[in-house]
Length: 533
Image (cartoon, rainbow, N blue to C red):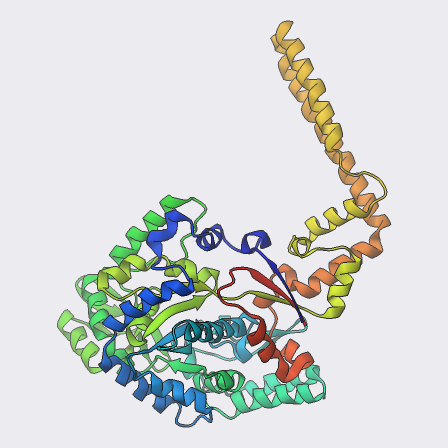
């Protein structure tokens, strides 16, 4: 097994905001609490310990034990749940949607990052305990984002009419997906394991939340992962003061709007990920998740006949806290209210919107967690590594866009010089002299000189492109091999981890896949990992 690393900024796949965050750019420090270094967790532990109540711990443990009643898990996971009653136990959390069969590979990388960071913290702070947590996004309602996965270039999709929170969706119809999927898996022992995993998760459970919990537990129970479904009335009851504040004071709208303006002023390259609404809550019932709005002093649920006065909605919040569902702005706060959490691990887009929330957390007096960019990985086989070596393609080359990669390598391996930079430089020198001559004689010639310079430079560009095209044709075998290899590793021109399902690698490596990831992923190493297995 072999590791190579490349800086996130050199990959071309990560925003300037995330790259600047990893570089600890001073101007970004107001938008997060502490940077993700082991030594910074000491202060984070102290801050969270002081603010997180015993009542919240007791409620959390009670709910988790209820959710694990019908799940066969390891003693380590059970111990982790029990340990959350202790004031010296803290969580390391990552979250993800309920993508069908985990969706893209980075589902695994998020959880492995949480597991490995928990281990590293235990070594550094042995008097405390650290529990890796996977937060299931059961309240999301974007079914189209989660109803498929990709396997060997094919899209396997679950088609059904869906409404409301996805966690409550019936798993009916997934037997058809398994039938189609099985035909592409083959009949090896690893293929049979994949079929069995899919069947036990989705065909033996009635809803998507239970199926996803089973699946994540099967994959990571040996590492003590704790899975939480926060769509729970007792957990929501802990959050009711913040729901009331949101409904009546619009605190998140006010603070996040100001933060967005400040963040935009730091750099025009920073894109705002989410914009707050005046009320950042949904109303949640069976097959219903719709926004709550305030119109003419009346609270309404969009696309329904549900309306309340101020006094009415206050009663509903108290009686039915489970019906109020936080949106993307408030979900992070809900997480930090109900978990003794130290760190949130997410992708670049997630961390970008978390950085919009720091002032909001400060305003409502909840500690803002340490933010950590999840591990990113490109898995390549030894055979692919050998092919790359024969083509003299480096790790840096590999991350170039296809046309740039091919143009670069064709220039390198051609037996003629396709780069006309010297000629262009010489031409510019000649025209500089012509400009001086025109200045001394008749300035009206300056325009004509400029036009002629532009024409001749364009002519050289055209000749260079024609020569490059001719060489590509001559080297068509090498070009085809480069394109095929890069498409294997970057399907559809995207990062492998954002496209490919874990089953593609499980088919090859079986039960060794996740232990190898656990062994090789280092959450505090802020570089992109290229892993040869």
